[in-house]
Image 1 (cartoon, rainbow, N blue to C red):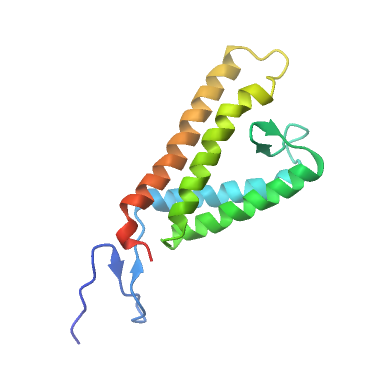
Image 2 (cartoon, helix red, strand yellow):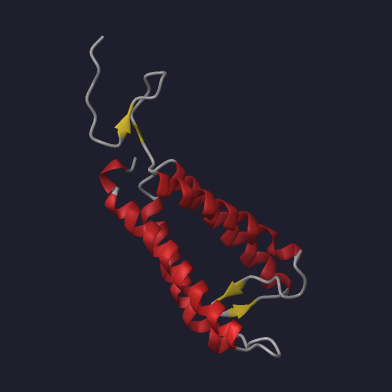
Length: 154
């Protein structure tokens, strides 16, 4: 039986179903990381790490019902987003850019809306810079990778 040729990044599964998109290693890692972040956000309402374990929304750490609602909403958003990356879905791309924009806004507002803990010194500032670089790199990088793979998204 002759094999059909599909564009690069697409292949038949073993049952001969419709072609699916293959994920590269970087997008696989991103999907797993966003899945772990989803679980972390879903656990925010339980405050397992103490009083400082609140969801940060628009630069301000949330408490009470706002923490519960936002933690669950963003946890579900990230779970859907991680699934979209894992399965290489076209709708994951706008989710990627929306989440990257949210992260950037959150990072800009955080130093203005959340005071540093008492006694925080240079280490707090260095951590903030490193955290911002990683957060922006991962979110924008994932969005760019998905955009580059747009033809392979199902």
